Image (cartoon, rainbow, N blue to C red; front, side, top):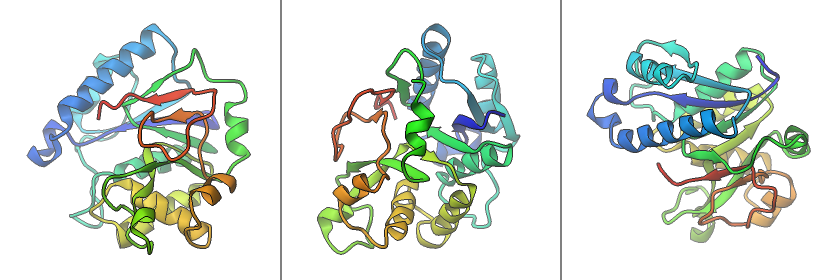
Length: 239
């Protein structure tokens, strides 16, 4: 495996039952759209796709995506039966580190290439920042409820595109999720880790200036800071 790698994952869906099919059709649209773009235009490489479930695995094989099957079961068996399925995202990143990666960029399926290719300085620029990076965005509802002010609670890392270069951080994220956010999306967990690493929430400017704001990714809406070029990835808002 390459030392620097992009990671996607697929879990749940039809085999997992009704509770996991809410976004399935939109997810399928994103996967097929992304796969067409991957074949016909700019490819995201190197890329590792981790998959749970036989149906999901077969789908990606038919799309010629060379997935890695983690399990024939559509969901991992976590220590808590009520664990949020978004923990799979961290499990994918942990698997990449276990296979030898030294730095990982996670991409949701609705994150598409916005450039003709990965810039030569892409990984070098990311290494200049913190070992865990994401893009701040405004949420309608409070996400970071441990913060004092309501306005600050609505500012949270967007989980569609994340960078990490230390495997121990993934273990710490999973620990925080299990203990603090077992029923939530992955985003409060990432924000909670960064708040602790900063010695407490110090505002979006400190988040950016201290190197936690990830470059190259533009979510196009509700962002805290406008993305400075070059934009390599863009959220197309499918999911």
